[in-house]
Length: 128
Image (tube, rainbow, N blue to C red; front, top):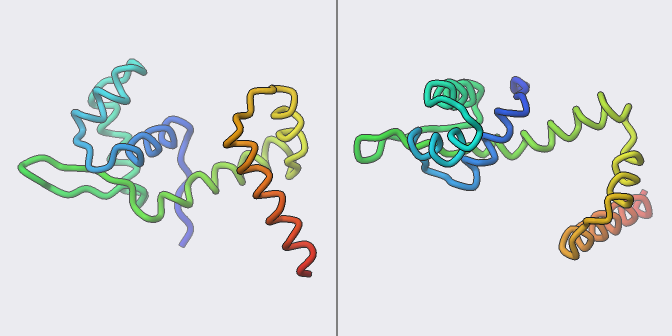
């Protein structure tokens, strides 16, 4: 069964909760909603939509619901990237790589990750 897609704001919220698991609505509102000017009701609605889509789970602990990303939430970023590449870049990652090289703000860690990914891609091609 394929999951419903999520928007940019929902993706950002899911990433926030992924980095701060077992958060209450109040904690998410303070750390995520307030800096973005979002009302508590808006944040709660977004969290409940993500829960309905299967990306968040919640548990009642000490009288409060605590929200955490589900295992399926790991698929979200991959899906978002795939949609971006297919829809915006017409299936080619070359424009993105060109943008990164022009940006000149790639950290040593990011560069090492990119080099490892290229090595993996080259190994797969040789394995064919």
